Image (cartoon, one colour):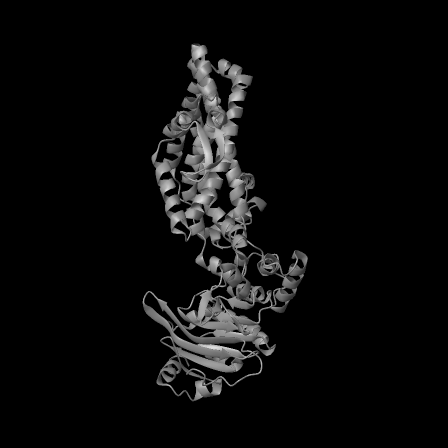
Length: 263
Length: 322
């Protein structure tokens, strides 16, 4: 699969995953995954649970360290630096600084329960020294307005519904003005009637030209927003292409089997 | 809302009989409850009566001693020793807890060993050890082990009674506090650590603003428990010849053997007051830590008492109207 779908683009790839291997307790979770995400595009990662989708996403912002291979975002290596022919781990401080350029939205929202909605969004720009407190709060208000929660800035996360919490989490990720946002099953913990409000916020981001990588089980949504669909099986990318190709004319038997179960 | 609930809620406003009153469920009468309550009340009244009227307690002598300057000075020492040890103990406990959760195996095993050792030795033994330390190590110095020293202190001058007491209590308190703090830190959801890391928050910020405030909710009740133990453990500093509340009372008791019982009562009441203040502080700190953790904060005891009184009055009025 390596290099087959990587035409030489003028700009550096938004995300490049290069031959990444990841083991957990002797089990191969990612087995040589390579992937290029072009700037401004939406990539949806599909696959059965346990296929390595979440791990792939977590490798991109270095929440998981790959055993071999590397990831670069906007042309910059993540979590490692080149030293001659070898890759050397970066300091924790440097990795934390890099993460500011990569937004991450969790399945379980993981909002900070002891902070108000406004402080949840404003915390990171202040803590990382990008904005002063007043500026960060103004930005937070603007972002919360954008996700339709301008009137709930003073609430605590547990006073909100799951869909509202996830929208706050998206605003929180946007507050650092990341070059790419990673979504790890953003609607899997939500009641069915709350899924739509979160998906529509993500859709707005997609049409606004933000680079997104989304792990999801919402096939209809994937068809609608994805520029590229990646199908992962047992830690390998077995099929990849535009939605009409992967979803309508799947070439690989595993993809066909998966789609027949979820559609 | 159930039918019975709506009846109770509506009661104070006057009795608008709900529709279908004939089918209303009468609550079960519980005569055994009344009897048991009455018996216990009689016993409590008897105990109170004995406490107040038994000449053995000598309440007049109690009143004489309660606010004497000697006693208050002892109280002041108790307060100082307890406050310093509480602060140093907590600080040490946080450091030890971080050590036990650290990725560094040396820090991990040293913290573990410290906690293991200091929890194993009785406080009184630690205090007496420290009291004799100046004989074991006449000078303390900081420098390279087996090499040159950079600083040295004359220990007999450094180790006043108060310092021995505070150090002794703090080193033991820190060992217990370490486990309390560690339990609190472990109680914070892994997702919180991940979210903080994914946002690229600096390490110190992650701990002080995200993880520790959430851990505090679990730490506070257990730590106040420790503090109450600490306040009472300060009575042991008497053995390193520091005249705290208990030491003072003990000394006065041997000078005025007739007043031993009222003097013990003086100490009892002061310790009860200290503990009560701590419990009240705990309540409010806990309320503060609960913000965000609960959808809405529970009412304060005062508000709850007022609401309870209102409800009783409403019930009484309803009964009277029948």
